[in-house]
Length: 359
Figure (cartoon, one colour):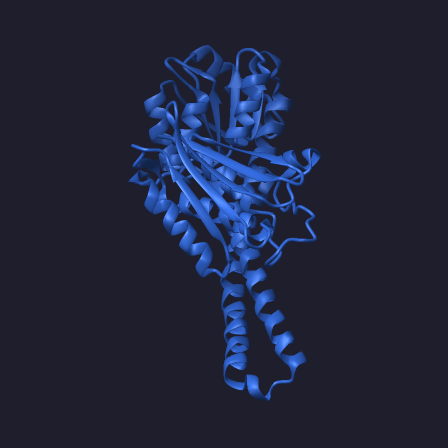
């Protein structure tokens, strides 16, 4: 049996039986419609249980589900392990809902009144194919991660051993080359980690799930220590608002975000200048700010900073070249916590990167 003839298990979640019957009939009318096996669930709780079992190839979710909506169902289903493609259905077209659906990870957004058999079948077929390609991408990424980590670590270990054991016998040029080997291995390792982090965020959507309360000052101190241990020479001024002792979230992920912002600031800061780290309460949010006195960022480049693989051109930058994934990763982590991240910068004066998470 070819892939085109394989049985397709469809879960349709809609609280209107008439809409279910219409959708089912459209699928039966479609080319190859006999391969569709449609299961209908009318309520949110039952649908959530079914999604958690991940027994279907594609999920058609009505936007209106009593006190809930299809976006909530999709997001909660993702949290419970459902990774199948989701197509959102709605009675009337609404661009705001359309954009929200795409941002939340829906594969498609269809208006019921505009549906026909061909459109619905094609949307399902494309959704399943994209899910298959994504699964393949994840498998290849996992394979690359496993196969590359070991050799990279071995290259770096041997280069460091060469420097430590035989430096007196090495020519100056050989010392420089060995240093470049270590830097290149580090860069490749960071690039690999960036791919893994970015891919995991986009496909799983579970960042922020390991929540809990923790002390703000200890988070800041640990981030500074991590950056300094990584070889960044930086002096930090820390200001934490009086009475602000704790924040809630995934401590490990937020630590990585803050450490990355500090490392960025250190790389762009002139020698002898301090990085300012401040934490304050703004209504029901906790705001972190990392300010440097570097060269600043042109206004026309600000909106690209959170684009994957975007690298700001800065000839004066100190330290190894980045991957262009750190800020993108950080923004996604913060947004997964229900917060947001933004940048303010003045050329010639410096840059401040802010992020807020719920208190």
